[in-house]
Image 1 (cartoon, rainbow, N blue to C red):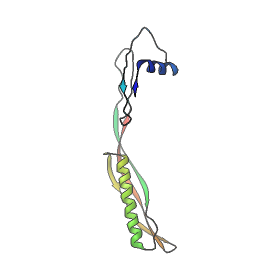
Image 2: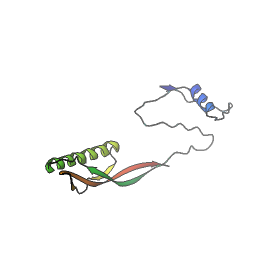
Image 3: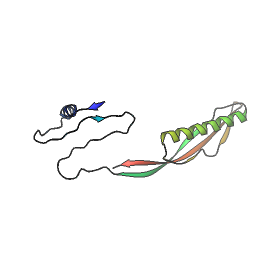
Amino acid sequence: MRLSVGLILLLFHAMGVSTAWSQKAAVTEIPVDPNSPPTTITVQKGGEAQKSTESEQVIDGTAEISGQPNADPNKAEKSYWKACGDWKAEVERLNKGNVIALDCGKKNPSVENYRTTYRSTATYKVKVKLKH
């Protein structure tokens, strides 16, 4: 999809942005790739355009992990380890290359109605970029 100058001016007008016809700005045919990060176009009269700055911050937190209850404690433990691995894979997938630490924590068994369930409190540390 390509944006033309006319479309951009129409959008500015629809948003209530005033235009000065004695000034000129040309933005033509910007290819938009749906898989690329968003593109920001800033038009500023006079002076230097203010660029956004980025900083990194480390976020840490917890998550609850639980396996499926099972009458066989060994199968219940295998289910817990699968849930742990799935959680780690999901955090890695959502935070590509920014994961600092993942720990499923200490598994604790509980028995209810002759079925064992293993649970734990997992911890994570992830690096995030903040734009200012």
